[in-house]
Length: 269
Image 1 (cartoon, one colour):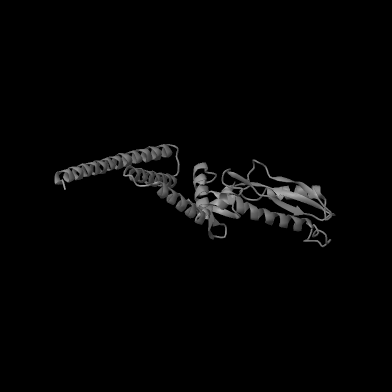
Image 2 (cartoon, one colour):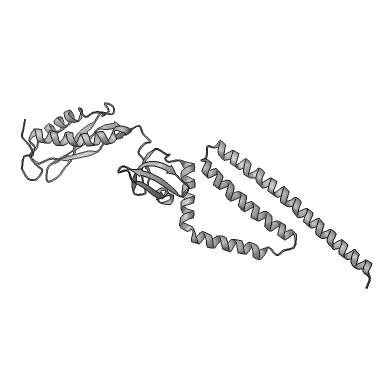
């Protein structure tokens, strides 16, 4: 046995292995530096576009983890480790996790689009996903809405994003839509005149646009009058309720019969 030859081979192998270790360390350090540089540049670019900070953190985190996995696989391949099965395992795990978290991931994707497109913001009154109220928090997976009856509701972002979104705060003014069914014996022109006078006295209605009080429809029971005053968003419900009260008081004061019955609702004045 040639001891010198063995030592020479061992020395060469250790040298080669050490060089590979050194090369792997260099690749890791440079790779991590490049990943950090890329994520910092991406974060700065998104920040300049006024993207929500929460979304920026999530996007940067996902990209950082993904690039780090690719770097580790590349280093293993450098050492001669078979990475095909390893990559297939990662892909299979990704598919399995994606299938298990399909609903959660769809909410995440919808939340990202809501943060980027901004159809509404925190503090806006919206009607979406079968719910109406004020947005108190816009998260990546769900949106928190405070309804008019003071109930805190958590709505999945995907349900909101896939539905029609009505932003009730996008315009400074909002129209109150009410209709009045009158009996066939009532003079519609007289009713319009009376209702216009009554609605004009409702507090906080806007003079411009002027309230609309017109004959909306005619059916077998009688004419239907549309009463549509405008109000600022903060006065909407006050004007809504006061308009209802003005309609009832006007019909009673005019002595209009209850539609379809002929029974007078109140004394004529």
